[in-house]
Amino acid sequence: MSEVASKTVKSGAWLIEETDPAAVFVPEHMAEDEQQLGAVAEKFVVERVWPQREAIERQEPGVHKKLLQEAGELGFFMADVPEEIGGAGLSKKACMRLAEKLGLAGSCAPAFIVQAGIGGLPVVYFGTPRQREKYLEGIMAGTIGTAYALTETNSGSDALAAKASARYDAARKCYVLNGTKQFITNAGFADLFIVFAKVDGDKFTCFIVENGFPGVSTGPEEHKMGLKGSSTRQLVLQDVPVPEENVLGEIGKGHRIAFNVLNIGRLKLAPAVVGGAKVSLREGMQYAKERKQFGQALASFPLIQHKLAGAAVRIYCAESMVYRTADLIDQAIAGIRAGGEPDAARAAVLALAELSVECSINKVFGSEVVDWVVDEMLQVYGGYGYVQDYPAEGRYRDARINRIWEGTSEINRMLITGTLLERAMKGSIPLLPAVKKIADDLMARRGLEEAPGGPLGPEQAAVANAKRMALFSAGAAAQRYATDLDQQQEILAWVADMLIWSFAMESALLRTLRLAGERTEPEMAARIAAVRMAVEIGSEQVENAARLVLAATAGGDELRSMLSMLKKLSRREPVDLAAAGRTVARYVMERDGYPFA
Ligand SMILES: Cc1cc2nc3c(=O)[nH]c(=O)nc-3n(C[C@H](O)[C@H](O)[C@H](O)COP(=O)(O)OP(=O)(O)OC[C@H]3O[C@@H](n4cnc5c(N)ncnc54)[C@H](O)[C@@H]3O)c2cc1C
Image 1: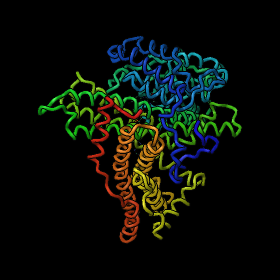
Image 2: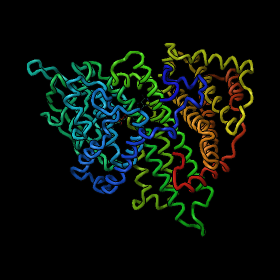
Image 3: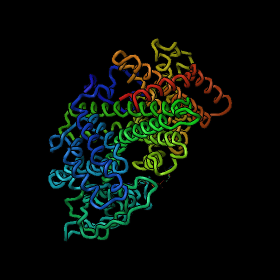
């Protein structure tokens, strides 16, 4: 636990406060015991999952179930479960390391990630003692495979519009469920489904449904673009009697379970894709070293090096934000417990809810980073990237789903901005005074002082200004549209882009500042170059998004005046991306892959 554990953690605080690098957790400082389970998972994936790749891709009967049980025996599904109820009670940092390593499992990864997340955790977080007693041991052991069934054919993003119904049968003391759930991961081998259905047509409720209950069946496997080794089917419920003791949580409160569980799902997706992106980078780099054109290895060409560097830089940002966020959640849990919450599972739910914006930021950024990486690594392979004999083709297809499930990128972007603004309006985060101060400072030409010294001084100034640009333009839009802002989806998404990139850049910057003096000179030089690249790429995104927000907010003289204020914040010398890219790429090649953790 880092030094600031006692402080109350507030979502979005990083946006309005300056963060001391010493207060930020970096993965390089992860305690040995926190890394241990991740190391076990990596070995398991390499020795047990990869050799069975073909059987997994064919979804050979029994293969997933067996692997799930082996993973359970190794303790992967008890990591997140509090000790009080029989789990390992590991920190969120350790759980993220585990998710990162499970993310190496290719198309088998969703089986593990669902079991360790949205499939298994509802019982942990919301189960009664009796429900936990009945199911938890099997979930943790991997002998009870789980799935999370929220989506329906006509309700995807609009999940609460579900039509699945639940009717109480007083004589049998059960609810009778009917409906069809769509695209359910693990459905082909799950023993237990977390199902959402409406009681009396309107009370959205969560149920624990055993596969063996009469009337439960699954459809055929979907023919997907990628993740061929992941089971995705419809779950069909026909007059399924679900005992009343299998209601999870309260009648009519299913949305709390659905959305709170998605917070952890979104967060865990980020380390899992970071793991996959690192593999993709290593493969692309190896190919670039081996393949020769014009008498030279591809890796000697600056444009190819720039792709390797671009991948490493984006992964560095994603990885930095994942572990920073995990530590914030650990701090929040500790704070909530210190405040008197006796139930560790409930404390985790509350902490995740507080940091739901950061969970969504991780999800959107991670899923877009992995797509960028697999796309550019495919390009490194040229025509061989387009054929199935090489791994790039499969990685490209497998990665694409991440921008869709666990809430699409569009929905998460709107949640990021919408939630922060809602909290600002309620006064639970002092965004409005921060916005006002920035506008006042800009008018009075205050706060535009020189960048601090040090090799990353300009980047520190640029990140501070990126946050100001986000606040300034969001504030202008909020003032212009007031309660109508939620109808301005483009603005919400552009503001989210600014927040996402600000958090990404800042996380990489703070991590690097924190490590100053601890690493070798060549490593620090590569990290500094990586941060320069990240801040150059990210600042451009932020500046562009801020301009778009202002242009959609004002016109004429008002717009010109706002743009001139924005200019003050975006004034910075561009970084030599070519030189920085070559420095990072050299280090990637020297270290034979992603070099920073
Ligand atoms: C392989 C796979 C596995 C899955 N696993 C599971 C699982 O285990 N459990 C489960 O419950 N679900 C699962 N899903 C479902 C997944 O979560 C949904 O596909 C996703 O939430 C999007 O819903 P949809 O497909 O109905 O798209 P839609 O909701 O129809 O969205 C279509 C497009 O419109 C956009 N859109 C929607 N609403 C708005 C809006 N208000 N404003 C602007 N844009 C909007 C979306 O962002 C998207 O781009 C899985 C899906 C796939 C493909």
